[in-house]
Image (tube, rainbow, N blue to C red):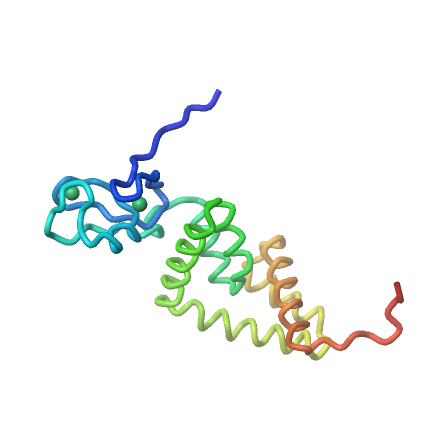
Length: 175
Ligand SMILES: [Zn+2]
Ligand SMILES: [Zn+2]
């Protein structure tokens, strides 16, 4: 049996305000709004309180999933991060907002820069045909987590391929 708690409805759009959504609480009546709805309406849709709301970004919620998304971003695998966001939110807009919030956070912490530098090194190795070295670097970046390392490797392999850096080995099997 499943117990389903009801999320409070946003007084503006009447849709549920999920705990993981980026949301705004009215400082007057504590009504939760979607941040987007508050911005559109410009004030509390329940009591029209004149003060700005208290905004709770999605990334302040310490969840296992957010930890994994952060980890994927730190690792320089935005594809995995996006997939994890979509697993968390069926609603694509919400997933994108969560992704952007976490991306912003990672950027502020300087993680995107270092992930970029690391990815460039690995892509260069792939372009040079140094497959084993590239795989080792992925494993190191992933802190020894093999599943993560393989996902990163595959992501970077597809990046290198997109950039036209991977030369198809002569004599590839014809279909
Ligand atoms: Zn709303
Ligand atoms: Zn209010």
